[in-house]
Amino acid sequence: MPTGVLIIHWDDKRGAELHAAVPQGVPTTAGLLQQIYSAHRYASLEAGYAALTFQDMRIISFFSGLKGVIIGEPNYAVAMLLRKDEPVAKFKELLLAESKAILTNMHSPKEKELLDALFDKMKRV
Image (cartoon, rainbow, N blue to C red; front, side):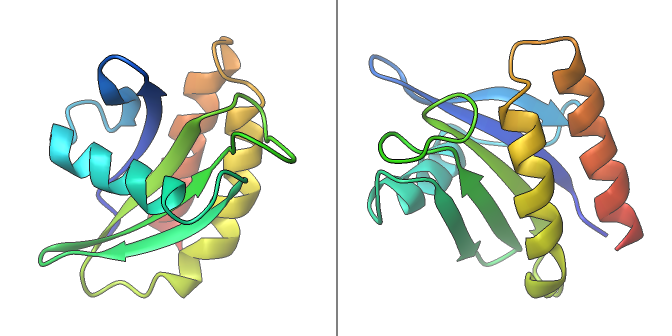
C-alpha cells in the first residue's frame, strides 16, 4: 500500500520545502525532500517525471517545471511515496494525470481535496 503523497516547493533561501502531505504527518526529512527535488532539477528545468529507489521505499514524482511549458505553479513537485516492493509503473499514469490537476489548483480550496483524492486512488491501484 502506498504511504503518502507530498507536494514539494523550492525556496531560494531555505531549499526544498514541504508544501503539503497526505496523510498528515507522513514521515519526511529535509534530506528526502532535497533528493526528490534534485532528481528533477539535475535532469532538466522542464516539467517531467522522475523515479527514485531507496533502501526502504520507492518514490515517483512529477515536476511542474521552470522553463518551457510549465504545468500550474512553477517549481513544485508532486511525489508519491511507495513501498519498496511496489512497481512504480502501475502508478505512473495516475501520477501524471492527477499532478496536472493538483498543480493547476495550487493555493486554492480545491488543492487539499485533489491531494486527498489522489491518495485514495493510489490505495485502490
